[in-house]
Amino acid sequence: MTLRTIVCTLALAAATAAFAALNAGDPAPAFSAPASLAGKPFTYSLKDGLAKGPVVVYFYPSAYTVGCNIQAHEFSTKADQFAAAGATVIGVSLDSIERLNEFSADPAYCAGKLAVASDGDGKIARAFGLRVSGAKSGVVDTRGKEIDHGFAERTTFVIKRDGTILAVVGGVSPDANVARALELVRTLPAAR
Image (cartoon, rainbow, N blue to C red; front, side):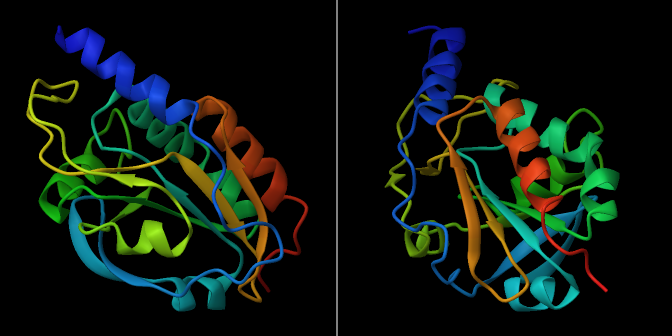
């Protein structure tokens, strides 16, 4: 199996994943996790994020894979629009914090504008009702580096300030996922 075939297979599987078990109106599970912004690690807390306004929590399979690269780039280029709507965005994957330090600072993807959190054991993804698959031997990223962790399905949750889920976005392309999340946050009252 070629690198291109592996990467395309991962992207297709992630893009066609089923919707999450949690739905609009459900309370979002509170979580804290190691995270990175512009290559600098910190601890992310959903509770703290919601104190500032609505939060977009997007789960993605792995940093440095085709679909995830597109999605991170789209979120980073629209970061100002999410902020103008009063929302913050946090990406969550099973990547290690070391990988996320690189990804969050990479000018082609997160570009220092998008925070990403490490859910190494998949506990956060499972709490949101997402499928988590184990690591697969021989799978490499777009840089040719082996991916040594599991994968959560690509799904985005738009969470209102009261901690309930406004909407779940899944089963669409990575760029459509970001566009839909932005449309949704614009329907919410901005942070005051």
